[in-house]
Length: 135
Image (cartoon, rainbow, N blue to C red; front, side, top):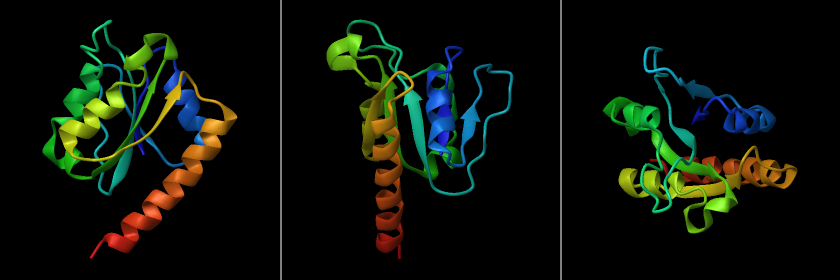
């Protein structure tokens, strides 16, 4: 997995609770970006206005603008706050549509125990299916 987490740390807490190998997209543009060498799922929180604009953090856009990083993207998980209504977890579907990958899950803030179980199980199935369809 590759993920972005702002200073609030909600997404980082979720990723830590998942207990799966992950690389973090840095908050500071001065810090080096991860360089994925294998297929990965991106976890991205949502930052948008009331109309859904600006949903994807600039550092995530910068990361995905690197064609070698984008080439290994296989799916996305969106995070957010249900207070944003229809724009809850909006970064997930935005990235999925732009990159032609599925939006696998959405979770709120740092996630719940149910989210953790659902995502772990879903990712196991997703990667198994990816292996079965790869030729």
